[in-house]
Image (tube, rainbow over all chains, first blue to last red; front, side, top):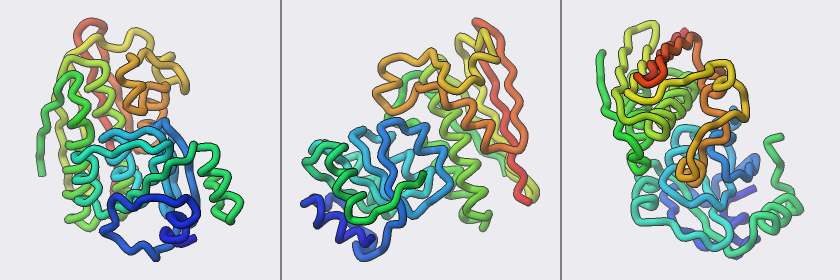
Length: 114
Length: 137
């Protein structure tokens, strides 16, 4: 699924888009626990989370995840945006709950990691 | 190649900086991406552990052609029960650590899964030294 498509489905704001919004995502992974994110081998992932702090971006950096989506209208800090830009990430933000966000993306065909 | 990074107690804003620097160095050395990920995930977890549980410490990094050796040496409370600490789900983390998305008892098991050698020396009331080795081949 294209990242631009994900943004459209969720009516999401694009906070950082240094990379190509037409690049494709294979899997979705939703977690507020960063240690679980760090167990993943797959990389063409969108990380969907309500955990909005600098460690979310650091975790994505370490796990080679280039696309993040903050749900529940969580606001990214300037520091987070800077780090995301530095790492060439795409950050989306939507107002929906985690449950609704994941449901909509699953319904449209985004696959889970497991 | 030798490098050192300081770890400051409770400094979550900078947790991951050392791992990030190591990642950049390994990329410049053209190390395989999957290997880099294993190394930086392990070091990042150890870095978060030191910041979360200890009173500060130092990360020592040595890279040669065959391997990377990272030692996270902290001054802190030590680990009273190593078996428990290695058990998935066991954690003594504070609410602050959990707020940062960690502290669910996955750190040490995660480190173990990603490295070729793991050696933990700990003394209660003194500190903990976590030595991680990943071979490039």
